[in-house]
Image 1 (tube, rainbow, N blue to C red):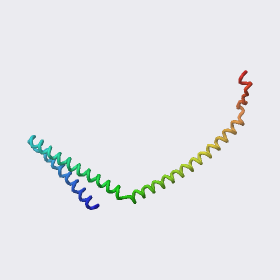
Image 2: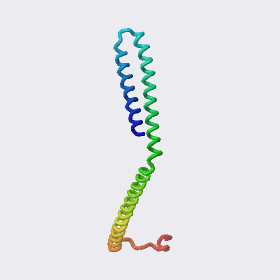
Image 3: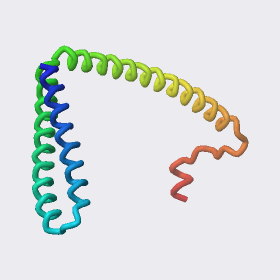
Amino acid sequence: MAEEYRQRLDNNVEKLVENFKGLLKTAKQPEVHVVLILAWTGSAVQVQASESLLKLVSEMKLSVALGDFEGMSQNVDTTTEDLFKRCDDVDAHISHLSSDISSALFELENHYYQSKWRLPPTTDDDATS
């Protein structure tokens, strides 16, 4: 099956190259009417060859997608493992950040309570007067 696809791919690409060379040769013709007719037919053939190549690529993609369950499953498994590792790394990073923030907060709290510029707590009586 792979050999058939390879053969069709080679044929389609070869047709595209030949048609393109034909279009270039056509452009060198001195007569305008001949150039127009040959360019029109050459472009139509070029479009057909391109469509054929696109169909082949689509068939190949479909064949790979339908026939490669093991590869896709393996890809899903490796992606899942990578994501779990990243999740563990993020959890560890968050844990370190949490401990750093908590120690920084404790230190700031100590500085605040030991500060001579700290205002005394207000009472309701102070706020109403």
